[in-house]
Length: 296
Image (cartoon, rainbow, N blue to C red; front, side):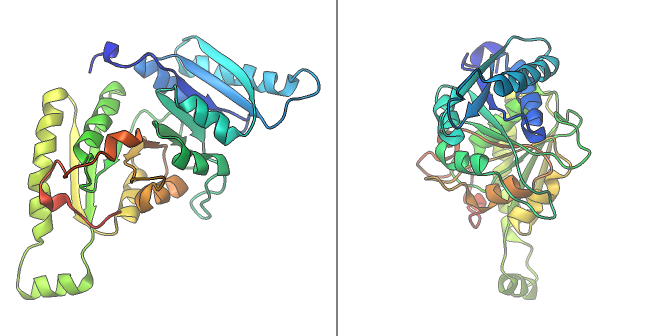
């Protein structure tokens, strides 16, 4: 996709001056630079202050400096808004190409997701990035692949193409992972008949169709494909340790699904939920029936 094919809607990032929000601003600035989009940095106050909002203005000044460093000097618009952070950011997201927020709470030992980020996963229908980082990991982290997890739902092919576009713009490799579950009784029965895992063979054939499309659009993109049996959420979580960004689709309604929930709580890298419309279109899966895995 050419640079001109992207819309001119901005990347919006919320900040409260915390360390997590600062990392989100840095990540959002790079995302805006790579897409050649304007960046809007927003500080939301719960209530209008009696006097000049000096604290908010000060943290926006610092956030703007971080954004310009990571955005290659591109212009940055900062603003103060009043209201509920969740609802203000959700309204701004309606006119944005991407909404970025920081992750708040514990780490991998006691994972928690901040209230604003958690509510936005259900309220914001557009693209949403929740910026996480394992201790010691730089943000942005440019030296690792982009990971995308697919489960065969309608929109899987579109999800991979979206992730491929992101990887190409970041000059990164793409890692596509499909993990399916098989009950212990099915494993015993299959091994008793000396049969190979049928789902693996069918899934690999189905993914070949997606691979051909990605290669046609991005002939220079290096792509790794992982097809394995396991518990999808934990398997993909482990793979996220080696990724700079993990892309995962959404379910219908306001639910993001078990896979996205686990990643949002404990991923070692930022998690991107693409626009809801990208992966929740009606109709039959675009890949072979092999990818109709147990829902994640």
